[in-house]
Amino acid sequence: MTTLADFTATTLSGTEQPLAEHLGAVVLVVNTASRCGLTPQYAGLQELHERYRDQGLTVLGFPCDQFMHQEPGTAAEIAEFCEVTYGVTFPMFAKIDVNGEGAHPLYRWLTGAHGDVPAGEIEWNFGKFLLGRDGTVLRRYAPSVEPADVAGDVEEALAAEG
Image 1 (tube, rainbow, N blue to C red):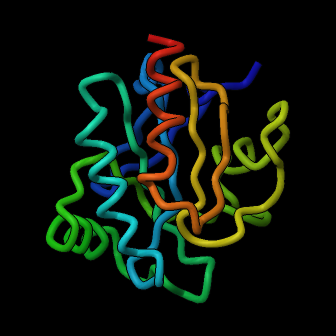
Image 2 (cartoon, helix red, strand yellow):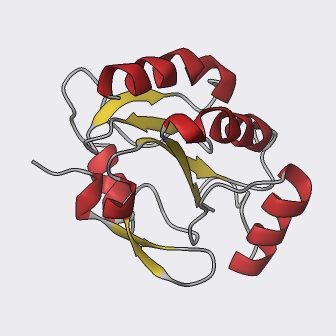
């Protein structure tokens, strides 16, 4: 069975990272953008990260420029924006595509079938996937779902698998 551990991604600093490093954590994967009406969700994602990281939550941010060119920046510009504007300390990765032929393999897997979790393309920036400690997909959230609104599911995943 495919899990998060089967993928690698390039960090904003250019380092290739095996996502297997996050096995054992509950992971929230989010496609992000710096110039979107939903960009303030960075603050909520950072709050989730700070609130639950000691219990085993990791937030992973994947910038994407596929939705109305709302992430035009370079890796350095994205890193600076996230750090300065929202104090982001969770791992951020290099800009990727989340839909279509050029979609990152992680997103081709995430948007596939996972039991009761709906499959299908990413609708917009800030789509979210909650993964269990074993690297499997537990839930999917629409972009409009605020990070605070997934806290209950995060707590359940941390408790159930901790």
